[in-house]
Image: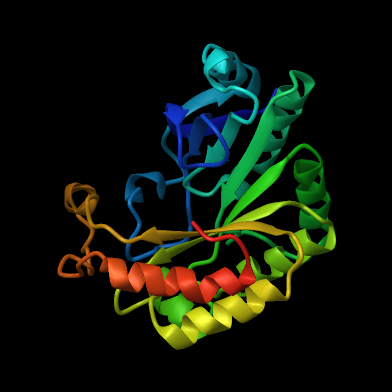
Length: 246
């Protein structure tokens, strides 16, 4: 049985998919987002090891609270770094009739046949993908995360081609991701897709700055303030032409 490295669990998640969710935060991420609120998930070689069945058993304790629309969400870190484990967990969950959601920034996504074969197996047991698009401009994305956005955009197009329901997540960071031109370009891209069910504008906060300090990592957004309500409303208005925004 496949094992996975887990950072933590959240028993009653309310912001990671529909309804009340049991959220599994996987350990390991290769993006270095300047605003990351979980830099303690970056290291791929730590975390508690669990089998998929052990995680499912833990989740099932809370099933009575999920109602008709809740279920299990696997987040991170970056869950695509442990695809085999997530696929096994979701396969077990679907046998129990549980709604499954994958929260990913798609950094590891590739078009190569070997990856696509694994990814298709995961998508076969995934009901919803929460896709985090950090920035629509490639150079700005690199400055913000350390890698290109080509993988995330490629993943978005592929998910559209297979008709997989997607919620888009976009963190609004003043001075980085709240530029009107970039938001318009993001709206244009999302409008080209037919599988977007919802777009979430997530206001930046720096509540995790203490984690960076504890880890000895320089936090470059220490002086960045959260976006104003005006800028949040502006982003929602621009992106609303691409779908339902929250």
